[in-house]
Amino acid sequence: MIMGRVVGCLWSTRKNENLNGQKFLVVRPIINNHKESENLVIAVDSVGAGKDDLVMITQGGSARKAVGSSEVPVDSTIIAIIDSVEVDDA
Image 1: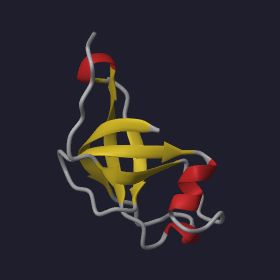
Image 2 (image 1 turned 135 degrees about the vertical axis):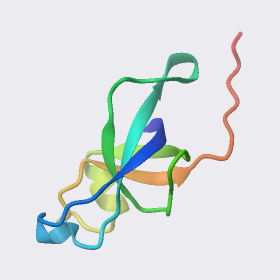
Image 3 (image 1 turned 60 degrees about the vertical axis):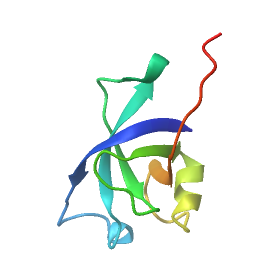
């Protein structure tokens, strides 16, 4: 699983029919010491996340299972909105 921050939305009028009705968000993964990566991930939103939310993403087969169908061609799905994070820096 990956932690990231929602930085935007993605719209597509022409797509695989199994993607109809899905909301796509652009997420910037969080790397060491809560720094944001330069990379972006496009993820299907299964929990109602929005811009600036800290989220948890699952990928691969788990991402398809999270949206309820192995027929949906997704690789990343937002599965949680994170309320807080505690990390022991010791």
